[in-house]
Amino acid sequence: MDHNALRSTLDTGKQWIANFFALFTQAKSFQDNPIIGSPRLNRLGLHILRVILAHGIFRLRQAFLLFLISADERRAFHRDGFLLVTNVLPPEAFEQLQQSFGHPAVKLHSSRQGDTLTHSQLLSPQLQSQIATIQSILREPALLNRLRYASGMLLSPWFYFLRIENHLKKPAAQQPSTNLQQIPNDPQKMAHADAFHPTMKAWLFLHDVSAEQGPFCYYPASHKLTVKRLRWEYQQSLIASKTNNRYTARGSFRLDDSGRKNLTPHPPKSFTVPANSLIIANTFGFHFRGNAAQGSTRDALWASSWRAPFLPLPLPDNQKLRAFFYKKMQQHL
Image 1 (spheres, rainbow, N blue to C red):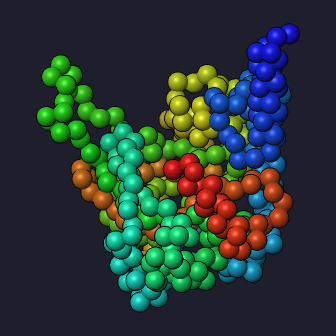
Image 2 (cartoon, one colour):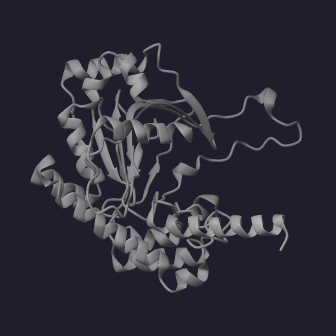
């Protein structure tokens, strides 16, 4: 075997080892990982095994964090898959948060999905140090303790400033003369689950959210691991590596009309809420971004936690660990 062939064989072996160990992480792409996406292995139950294990471990981690929120809020979160808290921050702290959104150090980065433009800024430790009030706000117990419980982690989630600009259309001058098709719809407006395991996302809205601003929508109780849901997950796992829907292929399963009728007995709840409202959701449950008026926007402090679904104990919260995860996140921005 010549040198190039040997190197190719070694590289292939390393890739398969990496793909195997990815099974024990939050990796979810059926398209990019031939083990996760293997129809043969998923026919034998690989995907379902990961789903069941991740959910069991998530509940175990939460059992260590019962002291963080009230029993009523725990019951509501487990019953519905979401938690809504109004007036979550004291008025002075909330006003400071609104002002921080416009701080000169905040440089929103933009990305487009269909006809929606998302402007976001990761609140890294470096950026937090430049905004005098933001660190104390992000450590506010009324906010942080609820996020910790919902994520099953003591480690703080990632925080962002977020602006959603809805229903954009391409300017007439940019339209091809022979093709006047509109920009495709925002894929986040189709009901979906984010991953195979429980994940936490949260929005603390900086202004009132109306029906015209594309509110967050959630199917209550759709996060529960029922027999119907497991059967649906199994069927999706058999086709995910071959589907034309790139989001499903990457492990964020989309819910079509037949699945919605079978899996979501309750109508979706649309969160039209006043300013200073906190919505925390388990995004294994089906959710979507609501329809919006053209050019409408909504601003929020956004939090997200996707870490280590198979870790049986909550990650502790310390400065070095937070800095490490923020650095890893910045590398992917």
